[in-house]
Image (cartoon, rainbow, N blue to C red; front, side, top):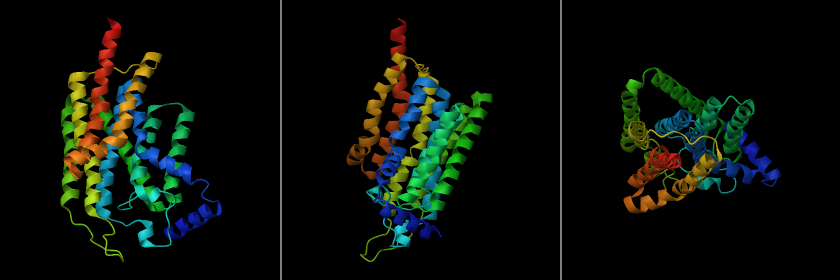
Length: 313
C-alpha cells in the first residue's frame, strides 16, 4: 500500500507538471538547515529556557533518529520499487536509509517546541500545519513512505515530551542539572559508538555498487547523535559561566539577534564541508555541528552579554 500511495502521488506530480515540487523542496531544505534559526532567535531574544528546551528536544530527536534508522536499515522507496522516481533534486539530499524520516524528526521537535512555547492559537495552528505539510512533502517528493514520516512525527513528539519532562524536573531540582546532563551526554556518546561498530547490510545493486554505504550513514550520525554531548557541554558552560539574559523583543535586541544569525547561517551551510576537508569526514562532521551548537548556546550569548553591559554603562 505504501508503494501504491507513492505511485499515486507520482502520477499526480506528473499530471500537474510538478507545480508543487519547488515549494515542497524548499520546505525540506528549510526543515533541515535554516530551521535552527528559530530556536536560536527564541533563545537569544525571547525566552532562554524555551529556546534551550527546543534545542534539547531537537538534538534528542536527532540522536533517536540515528539509533532507530541505523538499527532498522530500511532501504529507500526507489530501491524497493524502481517505478518510484523522486521529484526534482530531492534524491540528492535523500541518500541512505529511509526509516524513520530524518527530515520529519528534525522539524517536528522545533515546530512542536514552538507549540509548547506559545499560547497564541494562530501560531500553534501554523506550526501543526507546517508539521503535516512538511511531512507530506517527503511523500510527495517520493523519498519517504507514509510509515517513515508517521513514525518520524511520533518519535519527534516523543522527544518533545521527554524534553518537557526533563526541564520540568530541572525546574524542581536545579541542583541535579549536572547529573541529568551527564546522562544525556552519555546517551549521545554511546549511540555514536553503537552506530560506528554495529554490523550493516552489504547489498549491491546491478552495477555492483553498495545500495547504502554505511560509512556515509555513520558520518551523518556523528554530526547528529555525536554532537549531543557537545551540546550538553555547551549548555553546562553557559549555565555555569556565561549566564546571559535574552535581549528582549525590542529594536536593539532584535537587530543584535539578526546580526548573530548571519554567521550562524554561514556555519549551517558551509562549515561542514570546510571541517571535513581539514579533519576528515567523521571528525569534521562532528566538529562542525559542535561549533554550530557552541555558537548558538555559548558564543553569541557572550556577545549579547557584553553588548548589554556596554549599553548599561
